Image 1 (tube, rainbow, N blue to C red):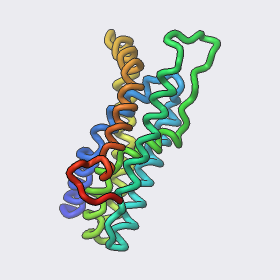
Image 2 (image 1 turned 120 degrees about the vertical axis):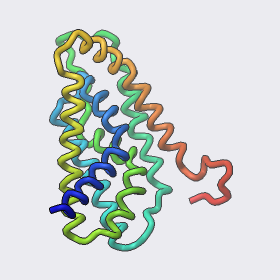
Image 3 (image 1 turned 45 degrees about the vertical axis):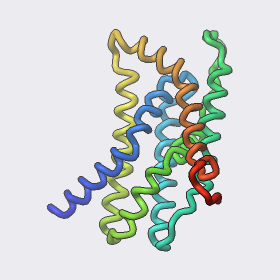
Length: 198
């Protein structure tokens, strides 16, 4: 029992350390009129699931994941941010906002997951099958908890909720664009001190 608790504890630390920024992104997604909670939760689950699968495969093959292609996924949050910037400042109640689909949210999660891969792969490489199962189960439970925390932060009735909602809606496009640019900037071709390019 103590061993299981230790595995769960490590999984919690790993998840929290690599997904703190996802909590902010989830909050931003939940404040957008075109994002249904179901789409956000599904997208986050699919994104985390994809990162886990890639990590498991890389750990099983004992190969380093070629990170060169990962930063180019930064175009996904940039495109979403640009789409949100084009929305009218005040939308008519009869005009439905542009919906953000689960696959776009999953793409943002994957694009922002380079640190996840860097932590998950070496951990999975040294774990037994049972330890992997416990860790992965903890990750999915924590993903749902992350979504719940973000949802409560946005939807909990308080005098600050409308203010927070307005700030998040205005900041969201710029946060996503900045995130995308930061992800792309991690590509080795932009590291002036690096002599090697992918």
